[in-house]
Amino acid sequence: MLKLAVLGSGSGTNFQSLLDAVRAGRLSAKIVAVISDNADAFILERARRAGVPAFAVDAAPFKTKLDGAGEARVLEILRAQGASHVALAGFMRIVKSGLLRAYAGRIVNIHPSLLPAFPGLQAWKQALDYGAKITGCTVHFVDEGTDTGPIIIQRAVPIREDDTPETLHARIQVQEHLAYPLALQWIAEGRLRIEGRRVRGAPESGVIAD
Ligand code: GAR
Image (tube, rainbow, N blue to C red; front, top):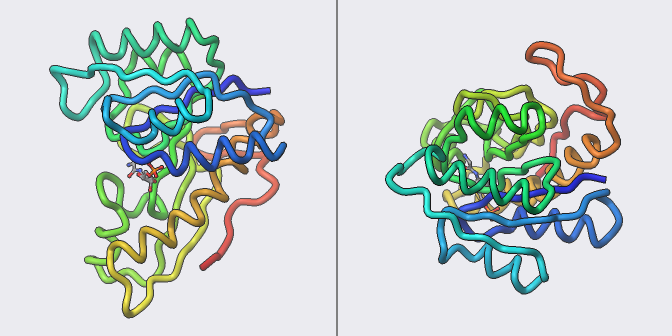
């Protein structure tokens, strides 16, 4: 059983999908902490309502990374809560070497595109603006790059003629909420091994969805 810490900066729908999967018995995990770099983020409120320990961490003076005192505080919380794995769920900072070393191979992220296309911010809008016809979501292990680590699962979402950034992101999120609990369950079952860039052992590698 995973002892999972979830890091997020926003509304926390992916955290909710993990919590729902745990409660439904689809994910063998206990969520031991939710940590946010934004004290007002709704993900913290969701955690409190669910009785999950919720922590706001001041990541200043950095704007785009988790480093220095903020990183040290996150590590302290992870250890105190006994976290075995870390799931980034809408966490809008780059994680740096302190956390990567402490949880090597045990940090995963969900990203709203079919990586390596459209890393970075608002990936659904990047795909729409580019004129792509298919996008989706990716769950991957985290390495020192931005959205570059070995891929566990991808789910594809067609882009419709009349899509707006909002409608497209909403359809991607439906797929995120399916993909993330599944990928973490494979990790909980000890199925996955990382060989170079490739993740082996996943019972399925991707799904064309809508
Ligand atoms: C999700 O779509 C997630 O893929 C994305 O932020 C959203 C968070 O939603 N993450 C990134 O863009 C990371 N580069 P949520 O707070 O409702 O889970």
